[in-house]
Length: 299
Image 1 (tube, rainbow, N blue to C red):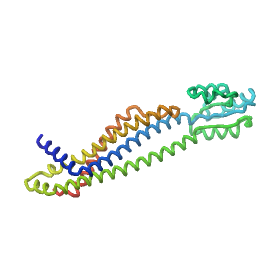
Image 2 (image 1 turned 180 degrees about the vertical axis):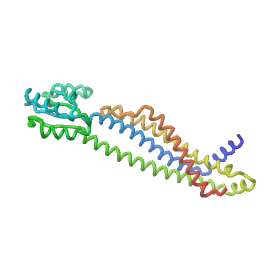
Image 3 (image 1 turned 90 degrees about the vertical axis):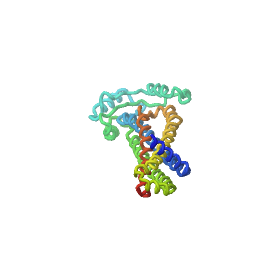
Image 4 (image 1 turned 60 degrees about the vertical axis):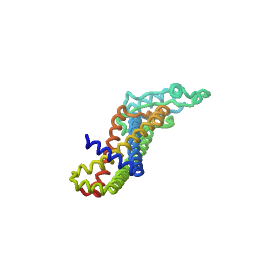
């Protein structure tokens, strides 16, 4: 107990003597771990969005001219069902009246988008799903080149290209975030190390006396190790507060207001993320202390 009190008192005294450097080290730890938390939450949110979107990657919409007759519709539908890569049960005809009703339901909170429409501008269409999302391009090509009454087909839409672009953006975001976190973590370790170096230099005479009276190596090292760990822990607590604030004030509002994007955070993410940030703070502080002790403290 006396040793614990001594270590705590020495750690606190060292922090007070080097308060400016300690604050700087804590700030960098907080920034690096805060960015880690934001990157993880952003990655999780956009990953869930992409997973939700990928469910529609295999969907193909074929928009038809209003001049298409019932006989032509039957012939086009028979062709769509006959494509081996298409799930025949998913082929569905949507009339323009049905499309308008669906549009009104989707934007029922924004009646200004449809209440002044005199004529229905939406086309008749067929919707279908491919058996494998990878076959979307081939199915679109076959419909465009081989479908009967191609002059009645005004447009063919699929989400595959949009999802591919979204995944590319997501990968770049993840790479930039990882590089930023690693870079800031290294800077935080070095800054904690500098703080410990200053503390060692300020107490060099005291350390010499302790060695002369027979103090063990670890007895001398522990206050410096605890100082680094404490700086890392304080920084990690600040990072957690920042991450939670961003979640409550920004991410939750984005998910609420942009619900059509299906943004979401996985349940239990924070239960994993918060302990990881705390452990990250301890590791950064311990590594910074270990580096300084290994180079500048001869015991």
